[in-house]
Image (cartoon, rainbow, N blue to C red; front, side):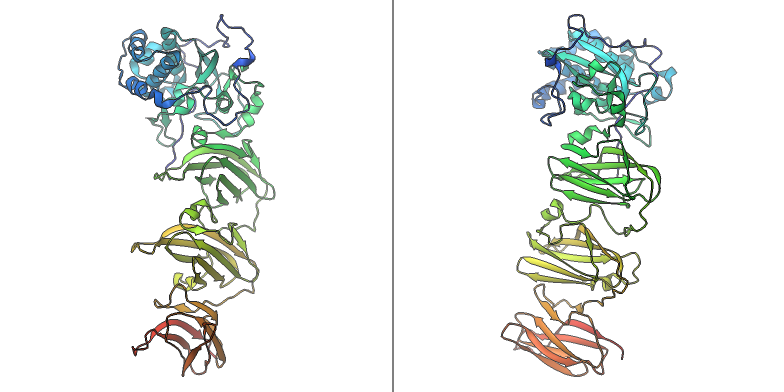
Length: 571
């Protein structure tokens, strides 16, 4: 899985070429106490990610124009060229924003070496690179040339180098801007709008991020804390302590339509070795997670509008939990980073063990419904059975063939033998899977499916976790079926694939379109068709180690087809 990290942050010491920013203040033409009308709704009403109505489709031609302008002689000439296509103040801000985000790259070398940073607007313009201080300075100067009131703000950010739960102190670590449009101030960050730095290679890639253009202040405050609290543009304002304690949402959290999380604190403490995280979202979304670098120590289940994650850390102490998401209809394999926590674990639940074959997410969901598995009889991802038996029923919404598989870490059985511990029964558009566990322990029941008309391979859909603590459980496999055993045939008895020796065994089978049924042991026995539509009869297992059920499909033909095979215990 490829993970991409947003370009969040700048050096904690400001550039030596630029003077230390004073505490930002409002322009002289505006009162020092911001009127109530300047404050957007707080908390966020979830209606828009922006602080003002913005129709991005109306910006398409303007955005394309900004990307083509290539003037670097001076900010005045650059702005003059950009404003040829901009009329309103909003369009002027937009074209300046788009040009900077697509023409100025982040200076990774300057981030690590302050002596090599260039932050003055003309240096940023000519070199085409800078850190956040340079981005913000260039944006402010270009707005000034365009006649737009703009402030360069400084403060703390949860960005590049940020550690979850860290305490902020000392010099500011980031710079961004505020612009005055339509009677109120709006926030934006062209540094974070420009691209990303790969976490492993430390290389910058242009990756435009619309989220940081006129971001709603209630969302902007999650990772930007200005030195002057007035510039939060919120009422009430957050304290620095609240900023430090709040969980870190990435911009993709909101871009993907995610809404809320629980808990919303940056640090989670386990209770009795476990903790639960939930995410609510607008539409069906795929999730995955990483706890201390692996997704094996948790149970993630999808919901129609979100997900639930139960984690079980396998070591005490502080460990990182990351949550990733992507749209349900995305053809990409890449999940986007959306949330990050620190988990403090005081004790480990030793009773929890997840089989290595367990895949996330676990249990049925909207995703399995889309593949044709409707109305599951077992909606929960984990099934507990005391006697080693359980059943799963679905209504089929598509004409599909299903291949179930049973996995266990401590089972010496082959794949084929484990598959015989599952019996599949079709009744109209319903299908039932009966499971008899071969022993106690933790098992994974996986479902694969394909269209009946498709000659290709089966595709994995979802899985359950089945647990059984009863050490006396030791169910034999179901009888082996052959290709002539139809989907809608059914065994009522005997269900066990291992029959007792030297016994009379009662057979009761449901099979249609058959003219004759034989049971071949040492002797051959004929089953009769009852009024209820069942083939019934008795046979004796003496003198044989195997027993076969054979069917005569056409009375005009002389050959029989094998449909079932039973084994007989050694006397």
